[in-house]
Image 1 (cartoon, rainbow, N blue to C red):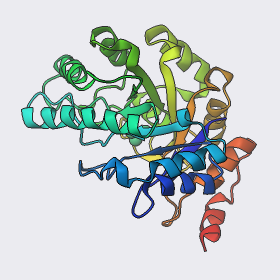
Image 2: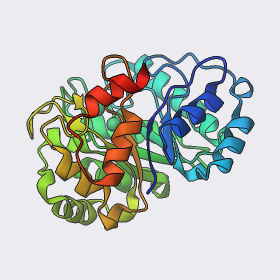
Image 3: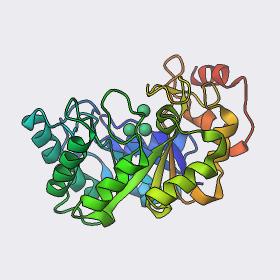
Length: 294
Ligand code: FE
Ligand code: FE
Ligand code: ZN
């Protein structure tokens, strides 16, 4: 199983540090932001210790295809109101695609964006326009559009939105999907029968487009449209459904990434990964996470 978590990339070790962090969790996959997720300041790729990171990944049997990059959430290609926000998004995404290539990765997770007040159709058209501009030199990089909760004016809470993008962009072969369990639960999908969700996804988008999943519990009830992640087994989705999703054979090849919250300042991922692999919920896990860190 390719499973890991989002990890941080910070000085002095950058990507190498991110890989080390993933290994410390017993992970076989990892996701990073190429800098702070809320801004566009980025270090030169030469400074990020990429070669050392790739060598360490190889040593530990982590495949390059299990290294996922998440674009910063300030990118909003759906913004019809402010041309400067749209242009900044296009420009950043273009450069982010180059960074993904330099990392020898090929999955770039992207939030489709929020239409603010323009309406979903106008927002979707704007995203198509932005993707067409940003993807001119996309190469082998796969843009994994993330399924969203539908908070505010967010686009991407229905599979049909993703289908629209595939049908209208210039480079449809490079449009894939990252399915976030917290987001689809919040968007209204019932995760107690994940096969039914996959059937629906397959009918609308095509299961071959699913290349990444974010495995998170949710603080809110099904359909709440809130997007607040919870630790595995402590939210409204619950351990059994998340465990069944992770082990569903139809998504066995899909890279799975945890984005659950830290517990009292400590990363929960080692224990959460262990628990999901072992298929048994550990009611003591929160205490163990804290003890472990001391
Ligand atoms: Fe995301
Ligand atoms: Fe996510
Ligand atoms: Zn989220």
